[in-house]
Image (cartoon, rainbow, N blue to C red):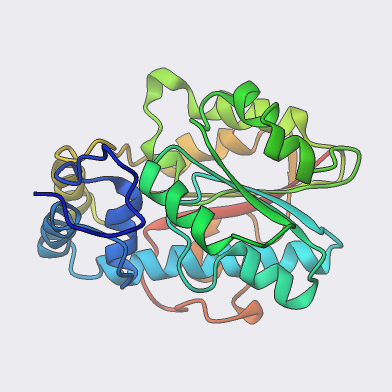
Length: 267
């Protein structure tokens, strides 16, 4: 039986777990269902620091946004945004600049429905339900066109989402199509889970996530690096999350390094 949350769109089968809600569970959020918690518990059984890895990735997103703002970026496109929990992009940027604009993009109906609720009345933020692997659909969406001025630099975020893109969809090509649509001087933040450091445990996570509608594809560093082709990678390069600008805020320095991250500037 579906759980009676008012923010669940009609017709959604809550017995089918989704990556957005499993991630919310790992972050300690409350916008998930029994099916998501079951998968999340299996992840934690094989990966004891699963919550710390999720938090490290989330912390990178915050630091990347702060760096983008410091570089003068005032508009953000967050692809695969998931369920907006405390400290999401619009809260970070609009705390400093109420006129900053943010568009969230996700294909998960529950994530989009909840985003719409929390953004109600926020004229400078919007949400689009779309598959980020279809860049034309995303970039031509009326919400994106209304809120994002593509004559000025954009902060493009693809955080904790590329490891859900299978090889046959060519994640590097997906990134390249967005990169090519961004004005010069835009900043692109990418993160990607890897099995480089914990192959057995991460292999078990992949198995656990096969039960969701969002299987995972962990990649080594040499498969992540091509996703930065065509941009100027900012210091300190493409590194494990705790090593990326820890001075910008809590980074879990010395914590799990199972997420590769980086930020690049479009040319």
